[in-house]
Image (tube, rainbow, N blue to C red; front, side):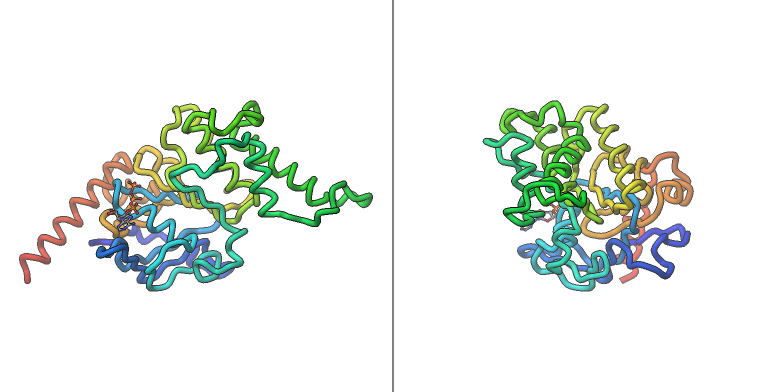
Length: 282
Ligand SMILES: Nc1ncnc2c1ncn2[C@@H]1O[C@H](COP(=O)(O)OP(=O)(O)OP(=O)(O)O)[C@@H](O)[C@H]1O
């Protein structure tokens, strides 16, 4: 299958800090199937990269490999310059799965407090702000929790039980947990599924603000092609392979398409034609 590129320089091909993610010959086997095959790509720092492709193409598997929770991964997969799964990456990556991982019998704030205390346990006796103005662990945690709840627009629901929230609100509690440690890389698996258009717009604004203001790198999966238009860069996947790794503009221009969706379909057809030609020439 072709791996489309406009030939425009990739933002991470220069010198300096390593990209957020770099994969070479990345292959993942699940059960009897090779789910990802020989992937080569990079995810740049400080940008929003969309991981787009139809259901079942391997997006979640790729994300699991990046955060280090996927077995049977071969090839090279470096994250923030370290091998995926390296213990020091745990606090540097925020990961939100498709299934919200929150405790239903705790309030939003209690959920966040719980995860904050795991991330930043501090010292048991350091409960008050020190005289020098350096925040104690408890102050830091409270500030981080309040900020993360505000980031996902749940301040008015901070004291509601998570079990009483809607599906979209519970997703946002999971996202708030991922934002607690101000991670350098955020890996978000379909974070906008089930959200209304206003919330979807607000979340995309938050994603861009995280990249622009905090320098975070974001890898966001979706199978909704209009979300592709909101990304700085795109990885377009199909059947376990990367069809394209480029900017939305370059994809549209390079394929003579008006939308990323049309560009994707163009690339799918081109790949199918190339594989038919290969078959008949055997
Ligand atoms: N535990 C498993 N064992 C074997 N195969 C699996 C397992 N989980 C997923 N797969 C297969 O791996 C492939 C990729 O699945 P994955 O969940 O990564 O796709 P996806 O693109 O994230 O799909 P969706 O958008 O529907 O979430 C699918 O064909 C799926 O059937």
